Length: 232
Image (cartoon, rainbow, N blue to C red; front, top):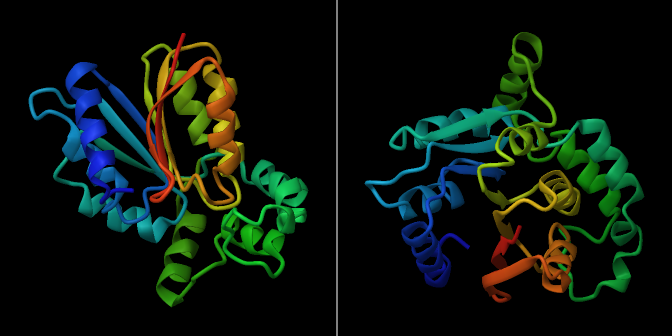
């Protein structure tokens, strides 16, 4: 997504024509992908008031804070986009995971027990090494990990026409999208989805396509992204 020229040019057109004061992003990772792509797309004379980007892995969050120091308006946050118990319940009962063979054109990260795979992802058990484990221990012992950061920020800026970028964890993209759609309701906002051919957002993309209150500005099936405007 971040390297797609159409994606970059579409962002610059939006930011040139409309003032976007607030960005809410899920999935910072190291801060070197979509976060920097959006930060660079803003006109130098008209940056946003705040660009919130949420990461659940404390090691990645810590690295991202360093990588994003150049942009003072970027506010990296550590915590859960939705409450962990809600995310785990969603994954456990997700029809698309239990019947993934019915979605042959949808990419998922594993065909072998995907419910357990995405449960482990939400619980932070994937790809751990001793450094990440040590940082996790420090965070759990001494820091306050916040939950429901996505909805908290949406409520805080629901009247500001925010831009919401969902680069979600694999198993909860549809849950995050529903959180945005239901929380912002009939208010205007911008929406970016990453991985619209993946389990995380194939349903989100289809929902946007079929709703009269959304206008798709640009998308790429090949690169798996969509930019849309929600109309008031």
